[in-house]
Image 1 (cartoon, helix red, strand yellow):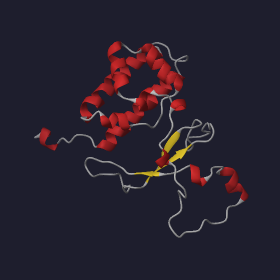
Image 2 (image 1 turned 180 degrees about the horizontal axis):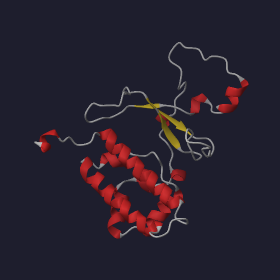
Image 3 (image 1 turned 45 degrees about the horizontal axis):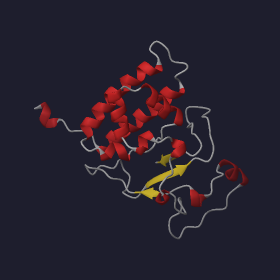
Length: 192
């Protein structure tokens, strides 16, 4: 009875889990000097258990390889290469460039960045105040783009198939409160 009701997680949930694991690797590398008992080099092995479970459950090796964002930092990649067991290193290498290439060595595909990200056809941009120019120093023709969503079960969390948008961060920013997001320069973020 229970097995009849049980459904595997959706593709979006697998992607969310993989993104959280990548973020955990970034944070672990960033905090390695401050973590002790157990150390960061011991904790990394505990993260590979859930990663291996997600990889076995998602069915296709293409799904984990397609998870590019958040990018691993150079420190995270170096930390992982220096502390993984041979089995974990094999799993890590099989995940592809989205996992093994650091953020600084990654170039986003050209189709991510298109012109007029926020405008719909026929709409004119309202005049901008000097304050809004200070708050958004980005050029619109180099920031956003769309990429279709692929979902195995048809659920897309309310997003249409062409509404996924990305932003390339132009400078490092540290969040000042819980409503802001800390970002690193050249990071590519999905905007929802």
